[in-house]
Length: 330
Image (tube, rainbow, N blue to C red; front, top):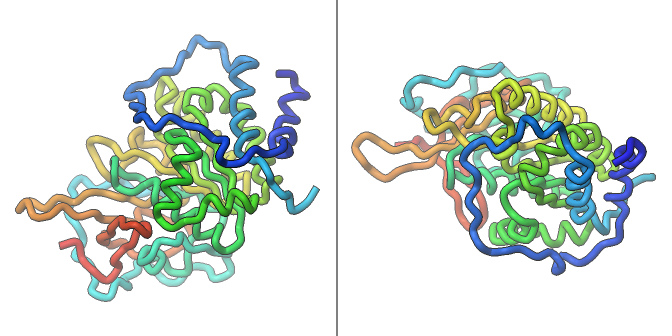
């Protein structure tokens, strides 16, 4: 790809004519995600073919678009839970600066635990183990903006576009309608392809977001992208640069991340929580007396916002995630 081609690929991708959503095909067979780093440090950087892969994915995702214009906290050693509050209105500090524009997540109960809302253009990480609802969290967060007339982008490294739409629809989020309206772009891309094209993506993504006029973006899941890098130093540098590009894009971004096998309060590689503005922890909580396992959500941090620091129970239903901010875990 020439320098000129690299500079122009967003324009080509954003303006291509559309096929219908029915043209999107997929295999319903379950694919097993890689469990170890698979990057090739001797590859010499992305080839011309590699650098075009992300372009092709955006070409198919951003069709029929009508353009509007040409402090991190250290994880605790124990899993002892705070006692909880009957009224669910315990906050750590005074009210935040009122002039900062803020948004809601769209998660019933959880928004009530954040005084004033999350600052716009924050970079958010949702950490949890398999089955804890991370993808649903992201779908619901994006739906909150879309149903208010905003535009959004959903980048998935795990599922096809069709499966993302189906999952959202099952929760009552009309993603198919948002796509037809030209307000939602879903990009499905392989994690290896994205890692090989990351330099091009970093340079062009802010312009893509600006052209699409998106206000919210979801990346599901950053753990698969982190897995592609051989060393911790390379992984941290690449993810640091990528998160900076997301911040420059001027959107409120949510990334999902697998939890560490050893500590549910830490992401798989222990990197993203230090690079983001807000961290939510989704976890299974198993009592010592072997009673029913519960699911609990904790707000680990939100910059420029004050929030409850209690762990609260939540459930995943056919309408999404609901948090019981007035209840205690047990």
